Length: 72
Image (cartoon, rainbow, N blue to C red; front, top):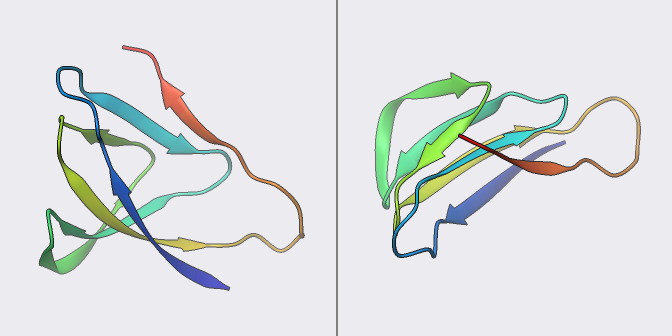
C-alpha cells in the first residue's frame, strides 16, 4: 500500500529532522508546489512553517511504524 502524507512543521523557531523507521521518504511536493521528480530521502529536514507531501510505501508485514524526530 502507498499512502500520501502531508506534514507541517508547526513550530515557529526550530527546524526538525524526521525519519520513518525502516522506510525511505519519497517527497513529491514542498509548500504545496509539486516537484517534477520524486526526491527519495532517508530523512527530511523541515524549516518552521514548511509543508511537505510524501509518498510512503508500507512494508510487507502489518504493524506499527514509528515516525522519529532526529536530534541535531
